[in-house]
Length: 118
Image 1 (cartoon, helix red, strand yellow):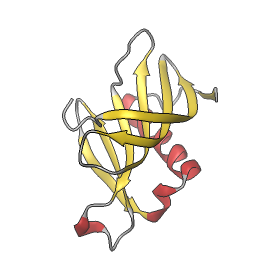
Image 2: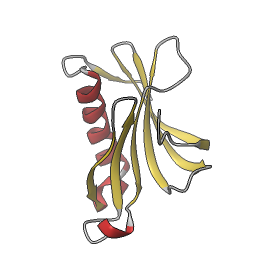
Image 3: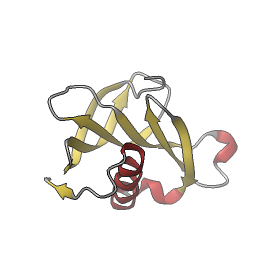
């Protein structure tokens, strides 16, 4: 997966179960790449250790800072794309709601129930 976040350390903020996936929202992220992450939602299939999808709130690229402080970026095998730029992605609850919605869309899980575990 290209442009996968190179997470060294992070603290889990929320955990969810969606169908056969575990979803964790991470904060206080230290990474080995050049991005400054505010939040990351990582989706891992049950029985696996590696995420198959990330939704990231990261410091906006210089050319988009007039639109807001954070880029909302989706990273998977099929797509790596900034889908929006806004200040609101810096808020944990707003980010989490949108990230879960995006993850369900990308993975075709719109009809599956999202269960909050933590």
